[in-house]
Image (tube, rainbow, N blue to C red; front, side):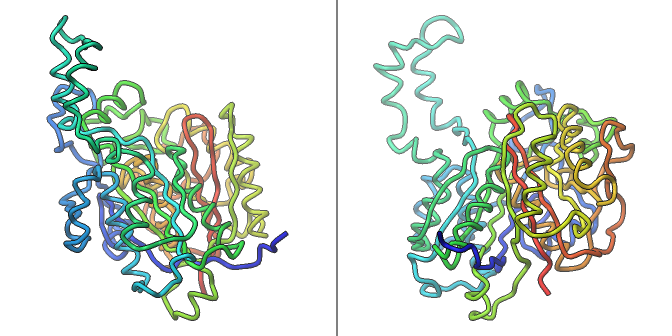
Length: 424
């Protein structure tokens, strides 16, 4: 067996968020308690029961790519464009230049979810197949006429492995390459896999990303119908209320975060900035969503990091403002930490981005450890008695311990825990 001895550090950060699209502005918005949740502008939402979201303002992918690669943008859905743009931001931040790494030792792990099609790509096909009863599609007409109206490369625009594919092509990354598609926990699972790859000396640098945009008419309508979303349309910035007794659902968002995971020896040879160190990871599936398995996952991650609960400065929770799910996550945290460790949630600032959430929230913990301040959780004004934890709210507090734990889970119970250490 190969010994798991190599250390993994974070040497680059690319963030595209509703409250800031570089580490400096992102951090200042977090310290100020700024929320990016506003009334929707991407569509006319007046006929929807949910009219708020965390949109990414003024995003133009052309600003992030040279002319040679801009031609590929027409083959990328917005989610893919976000991932490609954040990857470029991260590589710039990591002082990457072509030839710095052996291409075969430069790998990619991306977390992504289901990407909804743009209406313009299927509207002609759908309309040409609806010449029967009102609102009904004729499968015969669909096969004979509709399919011919679909753009030939339509599928390649929306596959969830496209962020990893495009990034690897643009930057000639020929090392390990994978796409993780476990929805809300995809980014953290991608981080865990990249961490193991570096430990096993199968790469020197891993580009680790998570991206998703739900700002699409199909996504917005689908989530409104099938996901518990907050109806606090009159107060967008106060709508998402993690662990609060008055919470009524989550708020959709969009964004991308890409982190550069690098072996410590490579980072030291390059003399680059280090945001923090990845020291522990574990995953599992809490099928019954009671918190028992999630608690075991937390313990395994701490064991992997070779630390005890009292060494953790804070727990960065998934906490999406769900009436049903916030309590079982809180019970799992309390099972391990009791009420001795502060718990934070940052979805009230940049919304629930699905596959993009985990790494963006991890970036907050990395910045908090680096700067020595932990931003507070917004909108948890009255802690639900079903959530037996200590939630840090209000002004930023000093970071007093060297470790942070990031949690994530899906609606079906898949979960992950990642431990990071302050770099000194």
